[in-house]
Image (cartoon, rainbow, N blue to C red; front, side, top):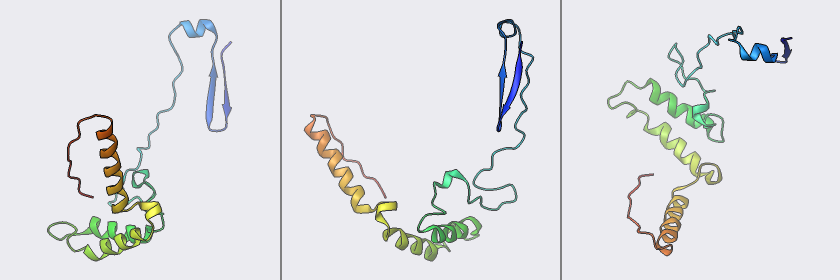
Amino acid sequence: MSYCKQEGKDRVIFVTEEDHNGPTEVSLPQDEETPAGLIQPDGDINWACPCLGGMATGPCGVEFREAFTCFHYSTADPKGSDCLEPFRQMSDCMAQYPNVYGNKEDKEEEKAELAKEMSTNGEQTEQVSVKA
């Protein structure tokens, strides 16, 4: 005998072997709500978007939100060229928290260590220019 039970937000459906062998008659409700992206349908910024990776709530969250807001609503040509000061403030803030945001020197050291490891392993290395 098939039956269904609710466990919190989940619905658990138990079926018999004969139910399992036949075509399913169970229909699950479709999620009608489309997941919100970075920009909401009304054009506002969705600060809760997981795509921001916590940048909006970290130690420099205020500076990040100001710089991103400036860029998003910028009408300058090229876009965002009128936002240099908010981005400079965000960059200065991030430099104060290298353990959270990393820093340019750490990235250079990591690249040097990787190149050294590759050369000691007998692998062919190639000089790659990366802009940080």
